[in-house]
Amino acid sequence: MNPTTLIGDSMTLAAIDTPSVEYASLSPMLIVFGAGVIGVLVEAFAPRTLRYPLQLSLSLGALVVALAALVTVATAQTHEGANGEFAMSGAVVIDRPALYLQGLLLIIAIIAVGFMAERRLERVVAPVTLRKLAGVGGADESSARDGLTSGSPGGGGVDADMFTPSGASVPNTDAEFEATRAGAVTTEVFPLALLAVGGMMLFPACGDLLTMFIALEVFSLPLYLLCGLARRRRLISQEASLKYFLLGAFSSAFFLFGSAFVYGATGSLNLSTIGASISATDDSGGDTTLALLGLALLAVGLLFKVGAVPFHSWIPDVYQGAPTPVTAFMAAATKVAAFGALLRVFYVGFDALREQWEPALWAVAIASMVIASVMAVTQNDVKRMLAYSSIAHAGFILLGLIAFDEAGLGATLFYLAAYAFTTLGAFATVAVIREPDTDTGTSARSAAVHGPTPTARNPHLSGREATDLTQWSGLGRRYPLVGAMFAVYLLSFAGIPLTSGFIAKFDVFAAAAGAGGGILVVIGVVSSAIAAYVYIRIIVAMFFDDVPTTGAPHVVKPSVLTTSGIALCTLMTVALGVFPQPLLDLADSAAVFLR
Image 1 (tube, rainbow, N blue to C red):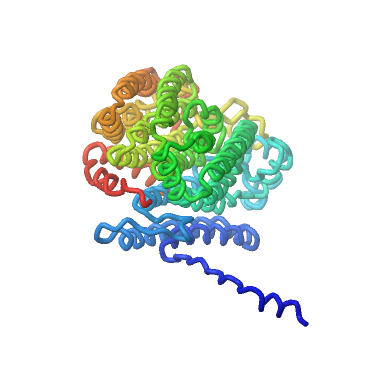
Image 2 (cartoon, rainbow, N blue to C red):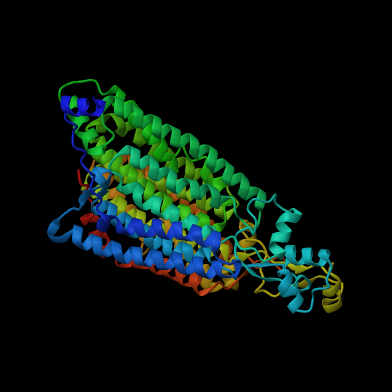
């Protein structure tokens, strides 16, 4: 007799319920992920000469289509006061906060991808084929190296992006030099950025901790790679990538270990079920120690991503060493995604334990505001100043979480939008300010054309980014428009009225004070005053210091994509300070989690 028949006769197999997949609600994320996968195929099969335009068109097109799809989904999911739905059997939550943050992430990504595509800020040795067409094919290799390092006419410089042509090569070796001469372009940054954006969109919309961990890794791994691809200062860039990877791996381990503890305490990884279980245990007087320990480990992983003290040590080095477009993207988008996930974990999963975790968040917020503001005063590198500013702002944003009500949640959502536009524009502006470069005359052709004495380069040609504060003396007097735009960003960071930063800080301070956090508000105001010294110091250097007679940096005019991105960020920084009510209303209407 057939054993299968015996088994079938003796027992009835349970029917397997096929999980539903809400493709329409998930379409914005699916579009971004799909474009990222297509971008990988483009890298594998498209000719080298076509990769850059294809990748740029694909990336921007996918992000714009995803934004349009998100608007359609948001209209449908919030119609007549609705608050979205659970998708993928509760693994993904399409509710108002998730839709708000996803829309913000897509707008940030569109600006950031345009910045990554910038090809007017760098000047490198011309590819061999172009050198021959220009009639300098007979120049020796030393002449070509002069062109690579100084962009001199003798080297036949051409416009290039801000990413190394050979990320796998040892910095400053013949392999990297030959990749530059061959005209190699690291277009892999576009699919990597798309995959990171997809993970960031999923991260604040996760309904369970396992999906949240997957989203965390999906957007973190591409960022680890992108941080090590800078064209200039290659060793610092690789060091930043390695530090970010190692510390990020530790934080991911903490998050995963915390998820295991929470599962042991509640028997579930679903945040809604976790919240109900902990609430029932707490109401009945049960022991919640294991759940609280799991939350502590989860918080380490999430606070690492937002860059709060004491989990902030990676931010100054990574922000300084990464390619500036990647720094701008990380500083804006990662903080939005990570705070979205942090809010969901605390509001949905662990609201019953507020009395236990609130003192710890008080300590983290105070340390972030005070320590980062003081450390920023000691910095002389503009990118590191902005990095410590980012840490301080993480402390300010935590005040909205500590308030733990709809007013605090709405204030946090508004603050994330205001901060994202300001920091994205600030880093983009830093990238266009370049060190002066001269033609050393070592090239035979250069000496014949310009003579043996050093010759100032065409101001359109660029050196490295001028990030040392001493190089910014008189910058605003030489380039009033650039100085004025950067001053707007700095005033917004300081929380000066008529900027988005003032409204954002006022909103979170009011929410914290209303929830009994008056001491936090006082500390926040004092920290803002300390940080204001840093911002005013830069403004004074730009507009009141004398312009150096030699070695003064110049501003390189970027492409229309970067120019329009900086203009939009400046406009939003001012508009949200003068007319903040529409976004405030939108943030308040989005301040309800689906449980």
